[in-house]
Length: 190
Image 1 (spheres, rainbow, N blue to C red):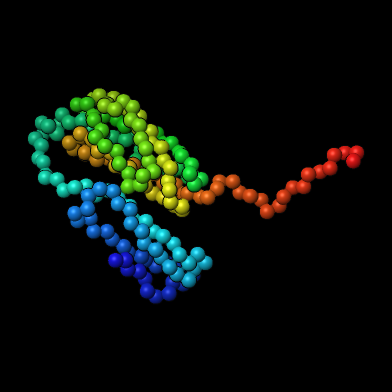
Image 2 (image 1 turned 180 degrees about the vertical axis):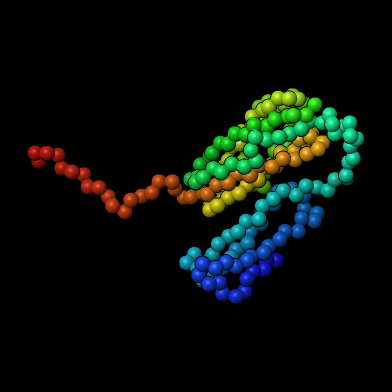
């Protein structure tokens, strides 16, 4: 149940909206909405709460030797700002995935809370001391500012999950139409 600032918010001031999601017994991807209604110029806005809930797992303890010889995932960057994207447009972002561990790195899954990201990892298994390229194709579905998190699960015993955040602003159109239209000039001599 959301809660919000009840007092009127002065021009230029801020209020707070709090909403939570109870993930108990609900593993998997979720997208929930909160509709904000006000007396603003745009009287109705939709806020999205998105995430991935992992099922509860038993805590596994590894020996120091297992941890030392484990694959080790690292990313060249953990986020990408993709700027303005036209609704329906697809944008690619590339990331370098490095394995600085002692065993081959196997990516078990790549997930996002939205169904707007596809991926390709080359090679699929990254040998010790080598790197691969992760290409994400992003096609956000919600208008406005978007922050979508990609969760990479691997066989790295020390850090089994790595996150990438994709940021964008989805607009109806990237071309702006001028209110002034040019008239075609008549050919000379007529």
